[in-house]
Length: 332
Image (cartoon, rainbow, N blue to C red):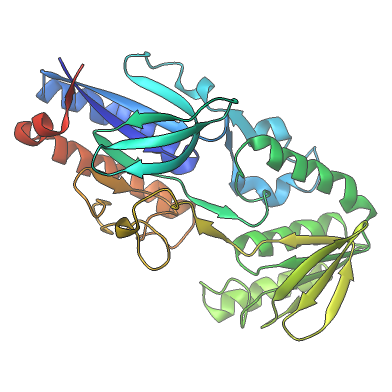
């Protein structure tokens, strides 16, 4: 029996959602059509836990609004319904990819030598890494948990707080902190002409007005140039040549694509995987991408959720052709 390994690199919203859809819908349909081939889904994750990062602005407030054990959930628990013949979870970080051999070099989570995973088809769902572990995983989920616990401890005692970044994460965080800790002097730097710069100026102005009602000061067209810890405080150099010293500094300025392990020819000038915006096919046959790391995405959960079904449909179409399926599979 021929085996076709569909490898998904990345296991947060994009990777986990794609894995479930493949296992529940795409793989059964393919095996009904191609009875001489069995299909396996291999999910590679640098963390044992899924991070519900949508709730991060509320999770950081205290340990009551969204308990940490609700924000971080073991990935393996969500895949118990699938047999070992159909699904494998590999814990490690992808560090390199050999396009000719179709192998991915993995640095395991547990102390060990590097290993490799072979793929027949590959889905890149590695997302982005933010400057702060409050918004994305930086390897193990424990680093993010530590960052949340530190804020839980320091927020009630803080007199001055500055948030850099006026996107959804920064704006919502300003609202949560302003509401829950009204005595603190809270400032948000939009880094643009208005808050929520991907939306219309009127929406940004409305958000600024609501934050002002909580006592939040919004400053536009100013960015943080450098941040230096200074005991329990942080010294910030700003792009307007001023310096601020604050009790808490929260960097919510976004992230960079996790694509360093991929061939440069697969990437655009922003480091994202070149992806057809309708089919989510990548630059090479058998390569796909979904979520923030893909060029079709403007960032945000809707681009992830709306991408899973088209992606899996493309895979089903591509692998249904017996000649292509035979060419890309390997003997067990």
